[in-house]
Image (tube, helix red, strand yellow):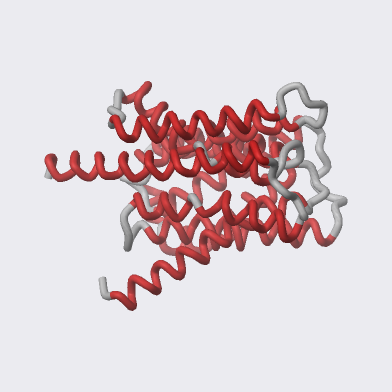
Length: 301
């Protein structure tokens, strides 16, 4: 790829990082319950995907097996649990702590893959993992014993990372069989159904929220999901997965910076130390693990 084309791709990916960085800031300004926030975010995203999927991927939907639909629904369940726990965490701890802790997702993904599929973790990747775990322990234990609920929020963010890892683990296999558009439509759709059922079960009102809240719901879907995560998925066609992983490390940095500017929320010294360790560990981990996968692919082909 030429330098100008690469610059264009990197610029678009940078905009995608900005998109996902606004997610925590937007959520903190919404007065609706976390399950409602998650439901509308995914429901609007599903509706945006629907016309493109039904017109361009209808044959792919028809060819999908019952097992494919089951796995997509299971993936959607884990995605729903990811959003419920992570969004709830934002109302109990700082944006900085929540976003860096939930970004531990690649670590959880590797652990799940090791337990379920016996995928080996390289020594250097293991070093990065341990550094990130130490950083998460510093942040997670910071609020232990405090009455402000920050410890509870920190634990929810970690659980959100684990649920996200289970979602990614299933998706990694399904994406070998399905296009990104079809898989996204099925997962976002099933996730929306789960969240609708959760709100019905908990008797959480579907309406009655302010006009600005509904605008924020749409912003989460358009800016953060479609303009953020979908853009980063698009980038996989042009750059290595390790570079996408590195770009995604910009989310907690961007979210923290935006929280300082917009919410006037300054991270504590332990949050800064723990956050730096997590990002350093993830940078080492994602870089080394992708190189290891690249070597495996080279020997296989």
